[in-house]
Length: 238
Image 1 (cartoon, rainbow, N blue to C red):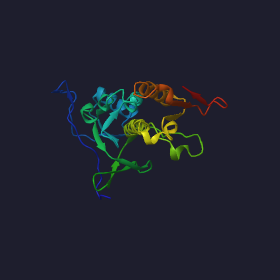
Image 2: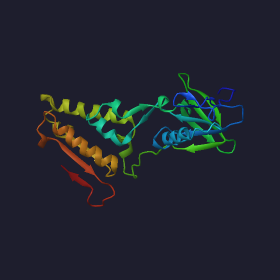
Image 3: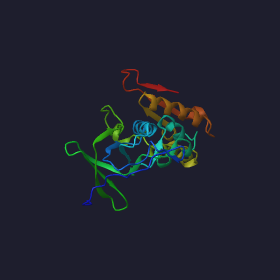
Image 4: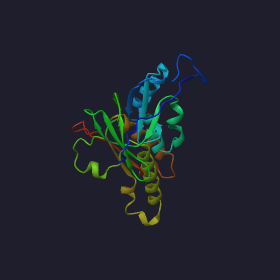
């Protein structure tokens, strides 16, 4: 771990590309704010601070990705309906007066008011001090305790997940198209979506639309939407 403290950067505040005499950096002890997470919560908190243009705050956003992901359209990338560039936007150009630190958050010491982050090719660590911290770290996929689901299922949470699912769908269709796959063709063309929330339903619908456009007879492709919360009514096949 580095023996120095990383305390963010100081910015001169601008308005419409020009220096604002009422909104410039001044020699004063600034209130340090760390925003943890670069999703909707973190980005919009940072943008609201930018809108207020208050020079008394030194704000840094920390995210493990250097881009903002519009997760509501993630399923469209997974099913080849949209290109990746349509749902991602680099974070740095979005934030003119808020600092950005790309790294993995390792720990938060609320007593000492320090956040430990790791970044770089050598994965070295820094401690960032704060006066206030905003937690916008998002959530994790819930498998609801269904046996083996977490181990064998593909998640739909990140850009990498969507790309991996798209590649898997294409690979299975390509494999099923070969003559030597005649015995395994039914299993290769059977896809199960576990979960009936927004991500599950949208992924199910987009997958159905996507495979319908392929060169396979649609009646050979089985799409199953599994709704764990609906006891006794969990399987729905199209």
